[in-house]
Length: 251
Length: 257
Image 1 (tube, rainbow over the protein chains, first blue to last red):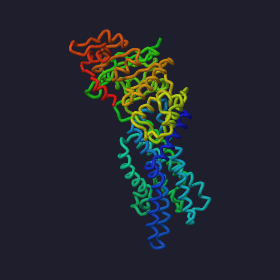
Image 2: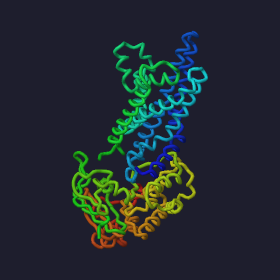
Image 3: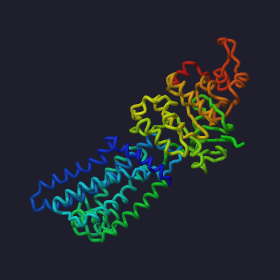
Image 4: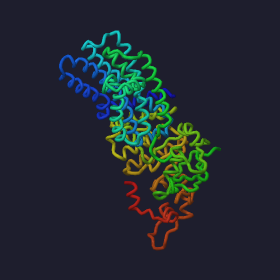
């Protein structure tokens, strides 16, 4: 891969994300709106139940933040570029498919880390996050992005319109939250469902996020969740590069 | 010497529709070559197939000896394209767009030179989404020029441009040609073809029906019917005689927006 191409495309992608208010809102600000709603609803509960619910929603908020950056920050812009014909034009230049995909990463990474830092600060302020877990939380966030961003790559590679992406992402986010045990806790699901979801990459990631962010015990070591997330992410990236289309026209 | 473009028996079908039907073409290095033809004649499909944007159904294509199907990366390094339909990054400025494209090539032209060439100096800090259609088309040509390619492919480059912008564009294409570059452009403007092209091919029904210098074609096919207005025959007459469909001044104006 050509580093000059990657640097130039990354800079362009950063400018596009920061200047496109709609995409920036969905990728950067919407997770905080959702977190605010979650925490607001938890605050209405009796004090003894509110504590647990707030810890749960903090983890949900972090997962939503990572997923929003990966989905709305990656898939939607990619499909919009294809719809407008920009990718078609780029296909006539020496830039590669992998470069186009990876160029989306640096800004999204910075945005996700910034969001995670805010949520981590909130958790620390509530007394759920001691400093010694910060390192592990950072790795978990990176692993989460390694899993979720390639899902954005695949959707960006395959879906035909920004509208289709938007509809798909809303459903997918709910499905992933469910399978990560961050919509309904896994221990409140039927046993076989919880066991199955608990060993899948989103389930492993969800458990590790809850542990690292709020101290809820996870049923597995963190490294297992990291490994599963990175491995799945690499596989999905490979699929995205293979299936990536420059345009919708006949080839 | 290797031809800049060598196309033999090119066929391109979209389902039951044959867009290009056994087209042959040779373009020598350093030529400014015009592809003329009525709408739907297969010009755009030919150009897009030639640069690897579409796969041919049959036939062979070589661009400076490279096959655009199997050696697309090599073709992309030496060919720059201004497609008829494409859009640039909406939130980048004109200057940022040119600098981005410059970074994609090994020996790009200076962005300031290209800004002058396409007449966008005053708009250098304007975001692409705020450009008019004509300005965006000029910027598209600019992204092709900044690559300093061996082959510049322009698909109806002056469509929608005002006369001043068109004159700037013609000057830029002439400069590129004088620098030794090869140009393939499609156009429905016979003025443009006569002003810019060393050689032209007229395409109808997906085939080349005539080729030569503009003067040769006028000499061969430029006769006028007795009822038509008197005057020196031009490529308009050639076009009309060979494609069977008159390109009236009104249609020409519509094509040019």
